[in-house]
Length: 184
Image 1 (cartoon, rainbow, N blue to C red):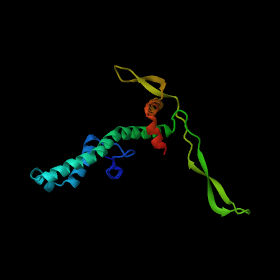
Image 2 (cartoon, rainbow, N blue to C red; image 1 turned 180 degrees about the vertical axis):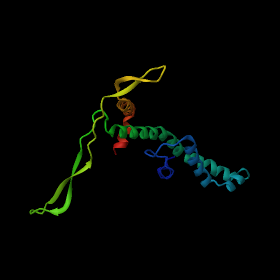
Image 3 (tube, one colour; image 1 turned 90 degrees about the vertical axis):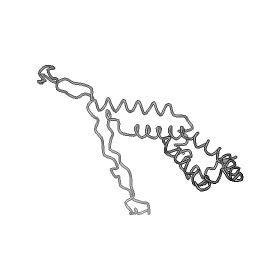
Image 4 (cartoon, rainbow, N blue to C red; image 1 turned 45 degrees about the vertical axis):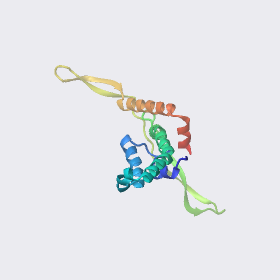
């Protein structure tokens, strides 16, 4: 028996589709069951031996496809996590910022040799780095009165670095097969 990739794609159960909860997965599988074996047919099945045999044959035929769909679920979970992690790492690092990004784009005009004329266009503005430390007010524990100011590590940078570390850990732990699929 072979795997019905058309069915897997139609139900979005093949490799590369968004991950599904158990309930979503079961609903999609049951939709195939209800479509192929509507309630009216299931109601008469106990009375019709030929229909019982046809149903058993169908279960055997669809079995490899459903097993493949179940096997793809962890792959799709990993792929979704990998894509989220790579997107997180692509964001600007708050501690270093980013220079402005320019791109040469055609103006629609041609020079004397017939070559397109381009101009440098700002596609993403510069992002200034955040300060490594910030001032916070210190307060008297009993009165709540401001007693001074102290320098602390910038919590936005601390959170940014922690999220980057988590994203990198996801990427490092992602199976190569998933990384290869995402690169296709």
